[in-house]
Length: 104
Image 1 (cartoon, rainbow, N blue to C red):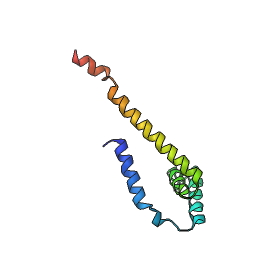
Image 2 (cartoon, rainbow, N blue to C red):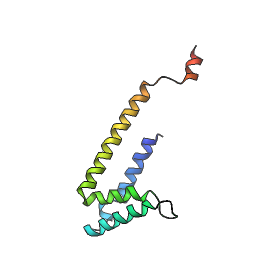
Image 3 (cartoon, helix red, strand yellow):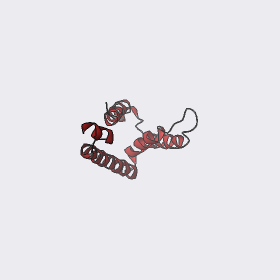
Image 4 (spheres, rainbow, N blue to C red):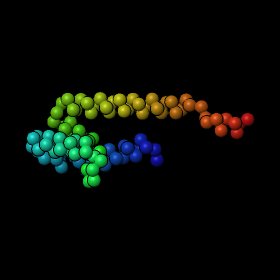
């Protein structure tokens, strides 16, 4: 199982778990939850809190704030381009030196 496959599974599970239906209907409450998660993630080195809170908070904020939504979209596009570029580089890469020596 590749890392990309695992990440995609994580994203799919997160979407099911935190669907829009499970968030408050109030825009102010969603923004408050998102800001709280981002601020809590900044002090992620403390027990209980964690750095995982930052992307979750940004995702919740992206629902209501267009600038954050644009940022998330740009990160997704850049991440996809980087993954595509990495995959093509891996195919073009020469085998390791040890493998080339064994062939001779």
